[in-house]
Length: 199
Image 1 (cartoon, helix red, strand yellow):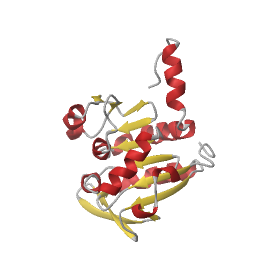
Image 2: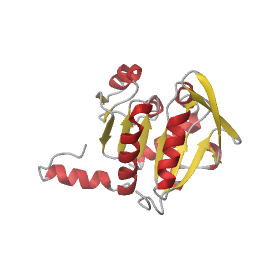
Image 3: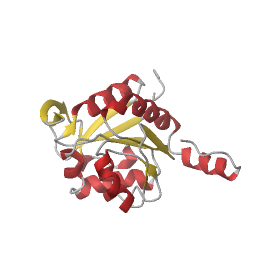
């Protein structure tokens, strides 16, 4: 995967309460594939990670939400942790930033509780996806088709359930981010030709 994301700029949107391994493993995978990655948060400085129910490491914030727009990036990552996405979905700037990727049809990768933010950004209706099990009904009520799989790919949207799914999540994330924003148009053409949708 080395160099697969060369020239790509990726935003990882998070705040205090992110699940530490979902941040660190994702950053490692993206940078290992050659991407330029920025941790974006509502405020500067550092944000607090968690290992399940215990405080973990701090992660440096590269850019504040007030400084960025979706057009600055090629793709978006939404790590989980219960506290992190639940806080972000109450922040209008975070919702608007995420909505920018949805509207531009740029790739998005969300794991665990990360899809909570996508609900508020109106990015799940009609999408096939997975999440931490407690989000299942929330996603269904928002119009998603929820499935219990380690990783689900739907037209540039990559979702996984939990930290144990990180190997599959990171592999598919890199694959979809490398394809970029034109993936949906290609897949629509494939469907028109009677080909099986990419999953």
